[in-house]
Length: 337
Image (cartoon, rainbow, N blue to C red; front, side):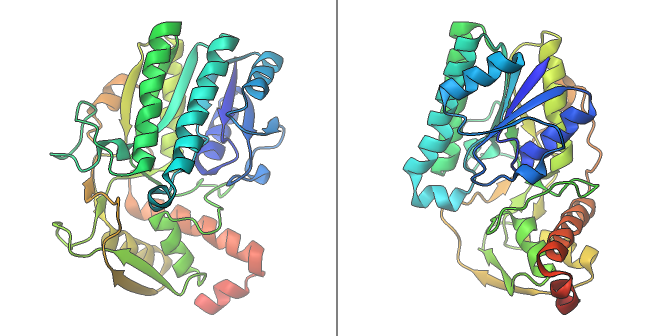
């Protein structure tokens, strides 16, 4: 079996590729390298530089490599950017998924795993949020992913496609061996920003809103280690291979940490202080988002290994320190110590 990973040179995708290679799977990647890096891939994995929306490219790769399953990561993921440029998100996420599904159906691919988001829920009426809760996205990012989910359901019904939709909560951390991690410049992930501040690459970290109805006034998120998330995809693939019915699953740990608690975790594991500036709320941000994980734990053969905020922060920090050393020859870390 060969698995096509779209966006496989990106943050989550590269962790997925490493997990598949370590499991002995044959893998091929399509990535336009807009936010990914060819150096993030294990040696020997075929990389086709192009767009996952290019149906001819996808069909050619599927035919040449005998692909029978697709894991789809390619897309745009920054909520504030989606508020500023919604049409770009509908193109990169919804329209790309439509084209990829078309290519999959035309090529006879029968298994499809889709990278979705908890942003489809908006501000839920209760916590933790289960997969049966209403979907009311607050941003074009969330809407673009929900539209993609709907298309996948319809395509599966019409063409006999088997799928798993994985709705991510807050993905964080890096490969425990520091082989890959979040390398995109200007990334907006909270932990990424915090470890950049801890390594002297940022003068401060901004907190958008400290007046929310939460214990410390900042938003609360359910963080999941990126390596655990990759293993959830592996388990989803095994589930489909055993003829499991199509399903939608939350990917989180089922516990929440506030923005301010997360910053303190980075300070704690790094042993460094850095400036924090409080600012106004940001449009599209969700107050609290914690996963009900009962379905994924009962459906997949998946047990998280890194369910600890300090561990997630430590792995993110180790990766960031590696990047800082590569970029500055160690000077930056010396200045921030």
